[in-house]
Image (cartoon, rainbow, N blue to C red; front, side, top):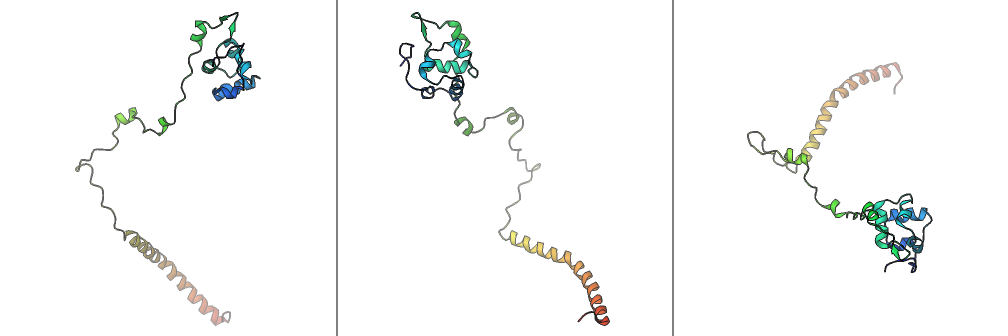
Length: 170
């Protein structure tokens, strides 16, 4: 339903389905009702902070330019200065598989498998490999700790014997 100053649109600016940025800019400027918006010209809208050419074009798709003295105040220059608002991209473009870039064209994704240059990948390890790995770690830890235990024992045993002889021990 076209909006004219003689027939103001009922409701608020939020009800018109305008972009959020345009609604915020209009609200900050004190324009909250649709009939207030219907009385504004393109030049008035261009004077509002936060409204660019795309927002003005989106507003004019919903609320037409007001007429003055029975003739439309819209000129071809006004249409040329405010292009049609660009469509908002959907999230499908983000979910789609990634496109090829220049780097993808220069560098191959996987190197060629020449047996002389690239050896075959090793076969998968058996399931027992993890158990063998744990046992090997414990044995290695025990062997590494053995010299410390021997050195400690060779010092503590004589110290205990001397303490017993002196009567400090049990």
